[in-house]
Length: 102
Image (tube, rainbow, N blue to C red; front, side):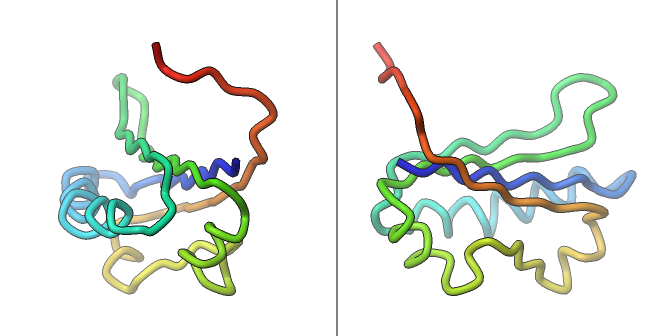
């Protein structure tokens, strides 16, 4: 399995705007992806947190590439997102071990 971790640092005062984008556009798009095993979306927790993350789990790298396209290792930022984001990253990990939920 492959875990894809997207992280976004948001510009000061833009948290609510970015969260609206996540809920309206990105979370529904992620849910539609074929072969997606699971996903988790998270926002800031605590007073000093300024980031959001989305963790997706895929059966294999082929599934990630089929969903994300040829630039699967690159974060694609749309023009309207550039106005609210100050830093983004994406990393991919091969699962070494896991425990299913009880």
